[in-house]
Length: 98
Image 1: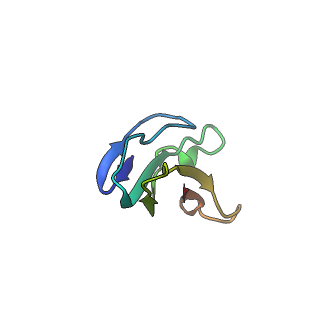
Image 2: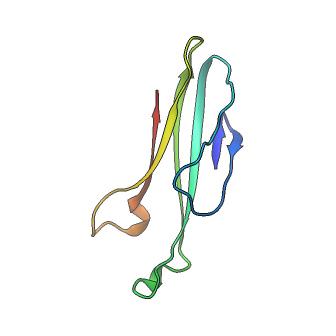
């Protein structure tokens, strides 16, 4: 899910690698984007302990819309840490505003 200034702007379920979250005009000034990603574990035969697990990852960022420019925001889901990092601590979101 994606929220712009607290109002829901996008919601999509299922597996996907890329989606346009929002493409509308915003008033000039400061805004806040909040993204919530929900992950569901699917371990298969080797990692069946992941089946049934669910994780929510949330990230937010302030950004400014200028009168003479288009605001571009890119959200990237990634894994951080290493083999000893707990699975629920590995999932993260990065928000880049330009």
